[in-house]
Amino acid sequence: MNQPQALYQLQQIDLQLLKRQKQLEEIALKLDDNSAIQAAQASVDVATATLTPLRAKARNLELESQSTQTKSKDTEQHLYSGNVKNPKTMQELQQEIASLKKRQQELDDHLLEVLLEVEEAQNALDHAQKTLDEVKERSESDYRDLLIGKADLQAQIEVLGQDRLNALKPITPESLKLYNALRGRKANQPMSLLNGLSCSLCGIEQTMNVVQEARHGHKLVPCINCGRILVYK
Ligand SMILES: [Zn+2]
Image (cartoon, rainbow, N blue to C red):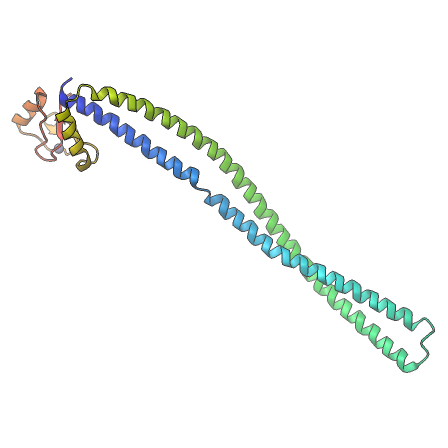
């Protein structure tokens, strides 16, 4: 194996390493992302915030209705007890009873409306809670899959790291220096296979002299167009 071929082998390992590392970063982002759960939880919070005051309102109306009813009955008992003889007082009590009954009817009508709103809000909360449970369950399953994928990638990266050490062995310090210098400028692909008479990455046909030198592989010959080192395999 000559230097260009050894560098090409290194490049293929490095490309695999980059790919795996990028996949690992994507998994890390997904593992951190709990936006779906947060959104579902927010819906539950909104539904709860709607339901709670409605329930309190219904409870207050119920209590007020009960106390109005009690007051009305007490007044009736007082009126028919036989203790009230004064016609004017009797008339006042009858008016008060009528007023209390009217008030109770209003309260009961209002209560019925609020109870319907409570029912609606309760349904909305049940629905939001069910969605949250489903999202959580799905997330847990996704999470497990992501952890498996992560462990798999880490194992592959470890193997590639070992392959890289082996691939470095035949490479001279000068060759490696050039490879590293070109890597950044050539989108991590400083090496390009010779495809017939052309550079496989930029597609430009080389001079016969360049092709011959690249085929010999005694030195690092750059593509006349893109400057990548040509590899004959
Ligand atoms: Zn080229």
